[in-house]
Length: 171
Ligand code: NI
Image 1: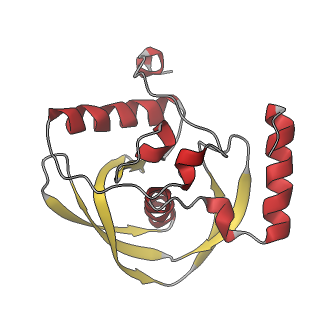
Image 2 (image 1 turned 180 degrees about the vertical axis):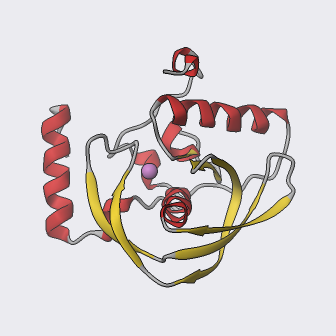
């Protein structure tokens, strides 16, 4: 267990159906220390929850910022943009904003994206398999889209019911 688990980043992961998760995020225009610090906090919060990705809207910030960490590689995605996709894969997907919920989802097999880092430099990343899935999942969050939006009405309804049961809340 890593000590990072006990660092309080001050960020709290919002759970669906928090309305921030449905909002379109704003582009980042200022690349300052505050942004760098926020990105570090996103990584820490993601790791503490054993996630492979976390997007700013999931902690209540409607900015186009996300992080992905998979296969010992870390990616900072500021203002990410999809360049191209290739092929198709089907696999299980989950989300830190949907604890305990997993669904089978079709996604492109490979993606090429462009994103800025905390200093505003542009980088191009190619992802395949689970990395591609993680990039697309996090980029969806920035457009107010969550993974259950891809499911049939029936499957989505069943998940909402399960979540309502888990939290004792109503939809
Ligand atoms: Ni997610």
